[in-house]
Each structure stands twice: as structure tokens, then as C-alpha cells.
Length: 200
Ligand SMILES: Cc1cc2nc3c(=O)[nH]c(=O)nc-3n(C[C@H](O)[C@H](O)[C@H](O)COP(=O)(O)O)c2cc1C
Image: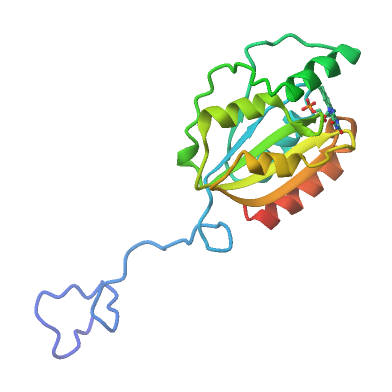
């Protein structure tokens, strides 16, 4: 190899030299994929489901997001009611503002950038189990997105939910009519668009 004149003795000519004489690093910097700001939001999906619809929506949202943590809220009372008695029992809980006892759920909401909360609609309200959870965890200063499942009468469930989440920024909401009885393709498409819109 011909050594250019003026090269100091001992200089390693194999290192590429930048105009500032700083050797280039032997690796490539890859910008992580993410939301519009370029950083990925750490996301938790937390939901309650009595009959599987909200669970299906949660699962579908989870599959549309990069590595979310998913948590299911469960009540201590696991008895399954059916028929008219189910509505009397559940509706009665809503009217009497009952906060059912929950099974322990190990989730530290403070470690997430975005918390996605899901509930079935009971008597035009969030299910009492989710209300119990929010009373226990007292989430604040978070980005929150809301989803609910119902049979066509969601009424003002989101307004009620937002009242339980003061001090947070609600970045999106979406509702589904009994998704477990509908098309999974339609559900996937609707959720895919929503997830994009909220930047999750
Ligand atoms: C106690 C109770 C009350 C309900 N109240 C309503 C309601 O006010 N409006 C409505 O559209 N659906 C109502 N539903 C139907 C559920 O919201 C709906 O089937 C939902 O998809 C169930 O979600 P899940 O399968 O996750 O429990 C009620 C269901 C129950 C069990």
C-alpha cells in the first residue's frame, strides 16, 4: 500500500476517517419503528369480560399492537348467571354502585405510556368490576384509550368512564356490538384502523 505523504507514523490506515477525524463506528444505527414521534409506546391492555366479547376485542387489539401486556380483571365471585337473572343481578350492581371484590392483579400502570381499558356495557355503564379496578389503581397522568362491547345500547358509557379517569388524556375510544357473534375479519380491520389512529 502506498502511504500518503504527511501520514503520521503508526497511524492505522485501515480505519475509515471522517472529515472530523473521528473513526466511523463498526455498526449501523437502526432507528426503532414506532409512532409518529419515532418512539414506541409501552402499552397495557386491561379489560373485564363476563361472556367473552370484551376478551375477544382485547385479544384482537393485542394482536394489532407490538408486544402489549394484557391483563384480565377477574372478580372473586366467578358464578355465571344466565337469562333474566343475569340482568337483574348485574343491573342491580350498577344501580347500587356495588364495587365487587377482585382477584389480585399484578399490574403497575405507572410503567406504561398507554393504557387501553375495555369493558362490557352494563345498564349503560362500565361493568362494576372495571369500576372496582379503577378505584383500586387510581390511574393518573397517562394516555388512555377506551373500548367497550354492547348490544346496541352503549348510551354514555364513555362519558361515565372518563369521569372515573380524571388527570389522564383520553386519546381514543371505540365500541363493538357483541364481536364474538360477528365477523372476525371486520373486527380485525376496524381494530387495525383504530390502533393506527391512536398511534399504538
Ligand atoms: C348485566 C348486563 C347488563 C347489560 N346492559 C347492557 C346495556 O345497557 N346496553 C347494551 O347494549 N348491552 C348490555 N348488555 C349486553 C353486553 O354489554 C354485551 O353483550 C357485551 O358484548 C358483553 O360483553 P362480554 O361478553 O365481554 O361480557 C348487558 C349485559 C349484562 C350481563
